[in-house]
Length: 179
Image (cartoon, rainbow, N blue to C red; front, side, top):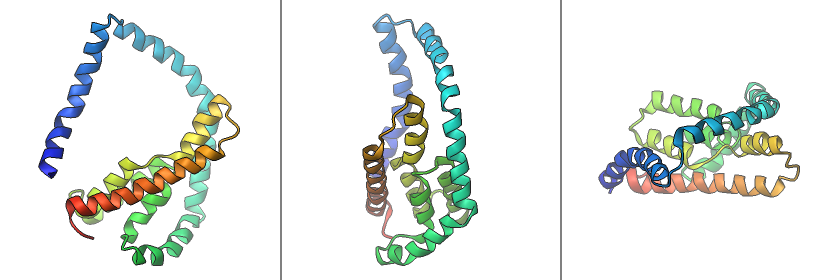
């Protein structure tokens, strides 16, 4: 099964890269002109989200540098052990909804410790790909368009991150072996 999924994934991205421009040409869409127009429209949006981005980056730095992350991790280790969740994976699960770059640093440390092709490396990669930076998205994008009431989006986003984390554990255990 792993070989089939691997073979499909090897051809999926090149196929998408080829098929989208071909479809646009078939529909007689001016591909390059559309790209340039979209890039022009993106600059004002980028300028508008910079303050929100800086605020979010500051909050992530405070969360990590004050020791709050370590405090929460120490409290969650007994619960993780009870559910047979590797404690090395917890920082990714906690940081991923806040910061993609912060969680990616922990993925890199897992790669250095266990190797990228180990069970832990595959699990870390799957969690990173199956969850999203929910707080970042809400802060930056909702802030850029002026959305003030984002509580429901926050609840659903964090629930989706939790489900992505749990699904990653289950699927990696089934696909790559037991914890």
